[in-house]
Structures are given as C-alpha cells and as structure tokens.
Amino acid sequence: MQTQIISPVRDADIAHAAQMIRDGALVAFPTETVYGLGANGLDVAACARIYAAKGRPSDNPLILHIADLSMAADAARIVTPAAAHLLTAFAPGPITVILPKAAHVPDIVTGGLSTVGVRCPDHDIARALIRAAGVPIAAPSANTSGRPSPTTAAMVSDDLAGRIPCILDGGACRWGVESTIVDCTEDGIVTVLRPGAVTREMIAAELPQMEVRVDPALTAADAVPRAPGMKYRHYAPRASLTVYTGAPDTVTAALRAEILRRRAEGTQVGLIASRETCAALTGLISPAYVYACGARGDDAAYANCLYDALRRFDNTDAGALLAEGTDEHGLGLAVMNRLRKASGGNIIIVGEYVS
Ligand code: TXA
Ligand code: MG
Image 1 (cartoon, rainbow, N blue to C red):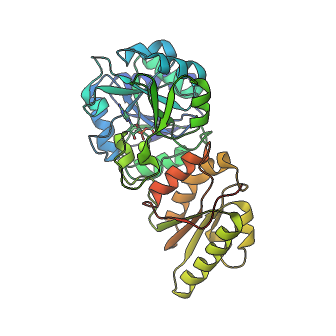
Image 2 (cartoon, rainbow, N blue to C red):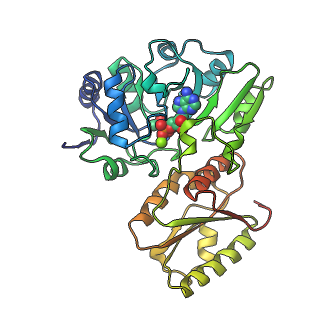
C-alpha cells in the first residue's frame, strides 16, 4: 500500500480524509499530544484495521475522539458530573475521560469493557477531520505497538509507511506525551490511569469535593494497571535504558561513573539528560550520543522531546541508554511514568530530588 503524506493540510484534504474515514480507511492525524491513527469509531471492520496496522493486542481499548463536547453523547451512555466538569475545564485539551459506554459503541473499540475513553483534542486539523467525518474517530497513538508514540508525521511514516493510506502532516505536536486518562465512572472518586499534561494537581483544583487518586500501578512495578494499555512495555527503545533520579549533583556523579564503567567494557552509551547535566559531562561522551532535553526542571521541554530522543538512539549503535529523571510532580509525573515504562522499571534513585 502506498502511504500519502499530506503537507500542508488544506480544507480539501480534510474533506478527502474524512471521506476515507467514512469509507472505513485509516488516516493518521496530528493532535496536541501525539499523532493518532484514526478510523470510524462506529465501524467494526475499520477499527480492526487499526489493530492490524499497529500489531496491537486486541484487549487494549481505543479512545474515541470527538470534535466538541456535544458529541460526548455519541460515545458515552452518561456523562458523569465529574467528567462534565473536567471536560468543561480542560477540553478541548490533553485529557481523556473514562465513562460508561453507549450501547452502539462496538466491543472492538472498548476491548470488551463496559466503559469507553472519550477525548476532544485541542488541534484544528484533528477537530476539523472529526467534524467532517461526522462520527467519533477511534484513534490510538500512530506507532507500531511497543514503540514510542510519534510526535511528527515523519515518525508515523517510519513506523507505518506501507501499512496505512494517509498521514496528515500538522507539524510537531505541542505536548509530546499522550493525554491524561481519568476514570470518571465512580461516585465521589476520580482516578488518574495515565498521567499527562493535565496534571493531578490541576484535576484536584477543579474537583475539591472529590477524592483524586492516581492508579498505584503507575508508580509501582508489581500492581496491575486499570488502563489495559498501561501494562505493556511501551515506549521501549532498542537499547537497554537506565534512569537516574535524585539530587542533581548525585545524579551527575552517578551518570559519570556509569559512563566510564560502560566505556571501559566497550559499550557505546547514549545520554538523555538536562542541558546542565549534559554540559557537566561534556568530554566523557561524543556529542553525537548526547540528547539534551531542555533546562533542568523544565518538564514541558522534557516531555516534548522524550520520544524523539528514544527513537533517535534506535538509529545509532548505542548499546546502553542512560537518562536523567525528574521530579514526579505536575508534568514530571508523566515524564517519569514514560521513563519507567521505557526502562522496564529500571530506575535508580541516588538521593532525594531537589529542584
Ligand atoms: O493523547 C492521546 O490520548 C493519544 C492521541 C492520539 O489522542 N491517544 C492515545 O491512544 O494515546 P492509545 O491507544 O495509545 O492509548 C490509549 C490508552 C491505553 O492505555 C488504553 O488501555 C486506555 O487508553 N483506555 C482506553 N479505553 C479505556 C477504558 N475504557 N478503560 C481504561 N483504559 C482505557
Ligand atoms: Mg499508544
């Protein structure tokens, strides 16, 4: 199959892509978080094509994307007060609410669950596509299953060229990590199932009368997560990844020691760290193997380039990746969650984090 990358995306391209969606084809499109691989969310055969193109396990449900809040009723049986509140506060934006599913949403979308994820992306191309298609669009991230999510059209193409007909190129995604998933099905409690740019703190500030939990599986290695997709070793780079977290000086010292140890055994190391830490380690490691993810403590910058960094090293001979961690507050919780998954839980704490 020939994959067409459409850039720039004009109104006529949106109309054409929307017709493809209505005809049951797949269209990759940009959102403010990561690129999605879209299909008509009410068409079983079209959704089956998503799983086939990605090589995705069938028990991992898809998120239904809507163009505006009035479409939530196309996906959910009821919009609970907590969900309505969060959608009003943060949508369009990087949040997905889990709600009881509407009867007409097929099981293939929800992986057989009685609930459905609903999200209104804050991206003009995404929303224009959904509006023109006239149906909720089911869309996982547009990567091969197990690879880091794509944040540019080129990354989508690296994974899926030849497997999907069309990629709408909207440039680089704003956030670079997937949406925050919040279970809104329980009375009096909301639970963050996947951290993202809408932070736990932002949710708690909006819902002072509710208990705001974080799924314990996000920070523990042994618990089973409630978002089925979170149990897979996602975002995995080719080389083994070790994450060092703690006070900046001790992290830098630990990285220095590990770089020297690996070098002595003949392993090429790749480093993903803050600008300050990279600068402190200059000379130990060739610049080609160093990826600076913004200033120390700038979690938005870290989130924004994390998947690019992980993918970049897949194209080098680096045999071991070392990364600097960050504080698990705000967007840092999302960054550390993705680093935890990418490293298979290989996180070394070398002292209390002090920002
Ligand atoms: O930012 C995003 O959410 C991106 C863009 C494209 O919108 N999409 C995305 O989709 O990250 P995906 O399929 O890569 O991740 C969806 C996650 C999976 O972990 C899945 O298990 C979880 O959402 N999920 C979907 N429906 C669910 C449900 N009913 N209950 C619990 N978890 C659910
Ligand atoms: Mg994904």
